[in-house]
Length: 298
Ligand code: ATP
Image (cartoon, rainbow, N blue to C red):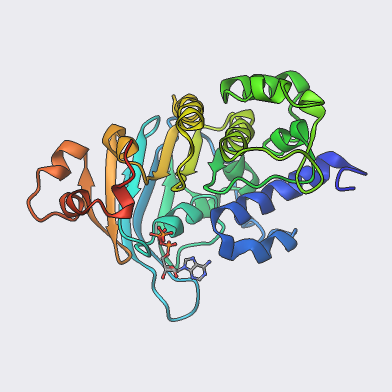
């Protein structure tokens, strides 16, 4: 029914809702809010991407009046590199991620992409530059093909299939009763956790966006799916600016930069070697305690 009319426009609108919903389950109510909440500024220009580097400059933010969740966050996610956000639950990692596509706007400070304040660019051009992979991939009522195409409604069948191949999803898709036309969702086939994740990675890949925001899954998959998902993620991360909420030690260790957060602030920044060597540093302590932020290493 979802696809009954004007699929491209519906897809385009749902894409926004999908991203919002995926950032945080607490945003689920926004799925019903199909109109963008704030319009672009009158002088908004399209974002011009060069390296796709992201700069947080003294960003302060709270979800409601009088509340401060981010208390002056500054860091740079270098273009084409992976930046891992770590820190205890409630530190503000998901909040940092949700400001990049402008699901919310900072109360103070600014976020620049390639030197342009994202508050001054069109939302459409900003969101076109970003792909998002969440912990809990959301599957819509529809076929496997539709579900990948949510990433970019105008993608051709060949582009959908290429994305699925790069996400190591093509083979399991072909093994489904109707291949790419197999319905999923409530009235469709049941896919395993790893398969759902690979579909969501394919959905991100079909966007071909220079920036990838990733909320790494905490729930364990069986070893085989784990490896397939990891290969798909490696493919998706390659050559992009990645900001990842990291839960696996292996992701953190391989990141080009680690940003350790606590209580709405950046406490430390550096590589794994640098931070692990700091006596009594937040990161060194998290590492020793095997706290959730950096545990579950495989
Ligand atoms: P976790 O790893 O548990 O997700 P986190 O480091 O990502 O933690 P956030 O989810 O950013 O932390 O949460 C930071 C603070 O902001 C918490 O106090 C949380 O309750 C609050 N918060 C997060 N999202 C929302 C929201 N949509 N509305 C209101 N408050 C929120």
